[in-house]
Image (cartoon, rainbow, N blue to C red; front, top):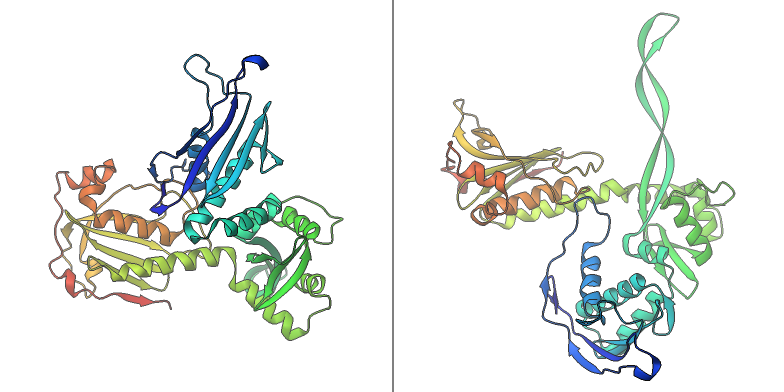
Amino acid sequence: MQVNGIKIDIEIQTNEINGHASEDGITKLKRKHYMSPHNWESRVDRYSTKDPLVEDFCKVLELNLPRGDYWDRFAPHAYIVTFYISGFPFLFEKNNNRFKLMGVNITKKEGLVALAKTAMYAGTSKKAGGEVFLFFNKYMETPNLIKRAMEERIEYKFPQTEYKEQNVYNYITHKYEFKTLPKTIYHKVLINVQKISKKKYALEISDNVWGEMSEKDLLSFIKIFVNKRRNTRSKWWKILPNHLWEETMGDAPTESQLNTMIQFLLHNRKDKIVIDKSLELVRTLETFNDIRVRRKGTSLVVLVRGKEAFWCICGEIPSKNIGGLQDVITVMFTEKTKDETESLYLNYGGREVCIDNLMGGSSIGDQIYTRAILCMNDAASKEKISTMKQRIEGTRKPIAIDNFDDVKNIWEEE
């Protein structure tokens, strides 16, 4: 089986199937087979918050579970299936609608997710069966909330007072005046978490500083800051950075330690991380001969030479991740402007093309990158995107940029 180009060795053996017949007429079937070759890419609804790759993998695994035959549409009420991942057997059992994975009671969905993630780990790491089993044990003994936190990092929110000039109305003089007033701003940041023992976890609260937290405390912390549960009696409720240091490190931080911690947390702001990573992705477009990238401050423009047209994708870099379905503008060049300017980016114009994201939450850089790749391969992309095909085959034909190869990439952050 291949998952997004990664080959995964997974084999299924059905050891026993108990049908709906009486005990005297129990049917036994033993068969062993590899999962049918299946190259598939993730598919997900645009508004879904689930992991599309894991969801698709679970569907494939479920299709290989015992099902009813032509005469009996219902799945057997009891069976034992062995999944061989990198040669190591994992037993998945069903008995009267109750499921077990390696002898541990579990729901069907959780069992399939555990098998999917174990198989994905085996396929990506190329580890032997014994090491895959160790990964499986570590995954199974970790609570689901913490599993997700270890994969995606923990969200933590804390306030910070900043002084800004504000235009305030003075009721004495009846005039607006600029005054420096304090303003409380709440920052959402992401914290790394690692498992250090069976019931102990470490959180990276500052630069190369890891605080310790028990499993019980970590679950309370996640429920408050990630799941948004109100618990005013918890010591983690609205905890400030200095108290977080004290609770995880054992003693209060010094002034320099606290300042370093706050700067470290601010550097890991959730929106900042998402936007910065997506901008790094956009900059990799400079390696393509048919793409030119220009950034000046918050303005981001990408020129693309496609197979059938020349394109421009542009947008403004926000301070917070907007994540709409269409936060950037895509234009196919159909005319040259009359006014010659020193910037080639402003010498051409055309009509916008509506290209929506498959799902919400994508950052500005991700949206620009995907559209640039689509436009570079516009001959194939137009067959899947009707709006692109309408523009290319419309009444106003695309025009070419004569000196495209002379355009230089520009990246000025300030």
